Amino acid sequence: MKILAFDIGGTEIKYAFCDENFNLSESKSVPTNAHEGGKRIIERVVEIIKSCEGVDRIGISTAGQVDSVKGEIIFATDSIPGYTGTKIKEIIEAETGIPTAVENDVNSAAIGEAVFGAAKGCSDFICLTYGTGIGGAIFLGGKLFTGSSFSAGEFGHMITHADGKSCTCGGSGCYEAYASSTALVKSVSEFLGRPVNGREVFENFGNPEIKKLINNWIDEIVIGLKSLVYIFNPKLIVAGGGIMNEAYITDEINVRLQKTLMNSFRNVKVVKAQMGNDANKLGAAYLASKL
Ligand SMILES: [Zn+2]
View (cartoon, rainbow, N blue to C red):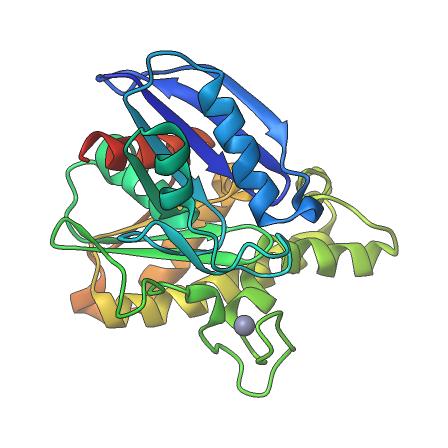
């Protein structure tokens, strides 16, 4: 079986072929040009599909909240204007005749990790991606738990600070305003008086003041995880996002989380996501293979 797997994000559309053994090949990417709007993005995806031969299935991982049954975008922020309501599955199947699976990007990544990566063989785990915001996914009894309107696992908008910092969701005190990688980069940039990126933050690890900011940020991560552990009692938490490549972070999270939990919850382990950028495409390809 030849699957064409897409990962549609706010800046890039990545795609690759995937065979029946889930080996990815010919990975490519094109700019999303999000300002052109959701309709045009899907038109370009259709053009890419039509330019490829012998494709049996399409798997789509995409930004935004997704009705994975209908394969449409329930809600997307203005990062992709006009994306809300886009009937991705319907459009692609009508244009190409190829069966198509569509899932939200964080859920796709969680499926990728569940089937092939850090959570392989684990039926109950939660997954968090630390980036601009914080995305989340929940696996219970070996299945993705999506909630009543396909939106479960928005861990970034749990309140960890009552009346705290304002958040992109319109609320305040949300977890991601304190514990996303953006929150760390912002605090270090403010301290240094110049904009820095995630890599530069850790290049300055030797600076005691910056190490303190990093440690405060790790405490913020742990505050959120503690609540999640008490809700889900998971055996495993998979932490994704480029910043988690710094081993210091997951090591410290584990040490601090263990100290703060009641005894009966201490079997939980936090591990770094393993599949990197391929997780989304592999998860989407896996869903497509089941069509
Ligand atoms: Zn929020």
